[in-house]
Length: 222
Image (cartoon, rainbow, N blue to C red; front, side, top):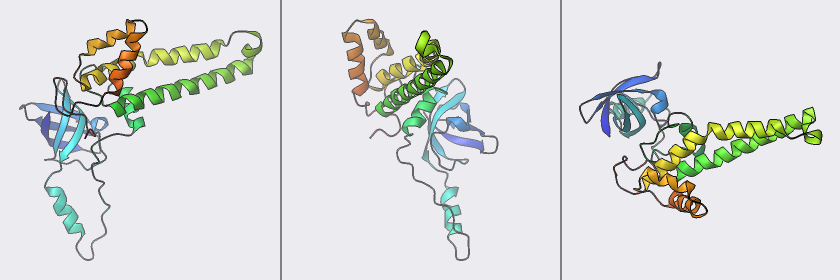
């Protein structure tokens, strides 16, 4: 959905957006997906979550911003820091992973582009590998490796898997939404042999380059 920023206080990291549907939505700094100045009057694209705005991307800055930059360019004025351009509003791989395990932990409604999905997969396996190394080191230190089962290693890895079950399901559901499919196709995971392969193929399909029933085109998709 599109809307206009009514108020944003960067000191407390909270603000309000007037949606094009006539409703007002609150948001927090964590919902901003770009490192770009946000001020009253900026046009934004966002996902609604009740009376909250999520996944906020700036589509047009407030008109007052260019005038400020022009004033700073006057002779004798201190040089202004350049404002980085919006390169599609896309996050880094780790940024997508961080969002998946925080604000989108149980988000089964919107869309997830390929980069978001595979960024999540990458850091999940890196994290589990780190947990495994820590577990082995602890088991070795107390002698489990030589005389008993590596209980600590097994325990920390199992806990790691349990922690990412829900975000793993939700991001796969959103990946299917992104290509225009129902999230119920996730149930293919229970089909022996071919189910997992089909879901793997779904994860490789490019995003639909138009809005669908699950939301707008994810930022960064050309």
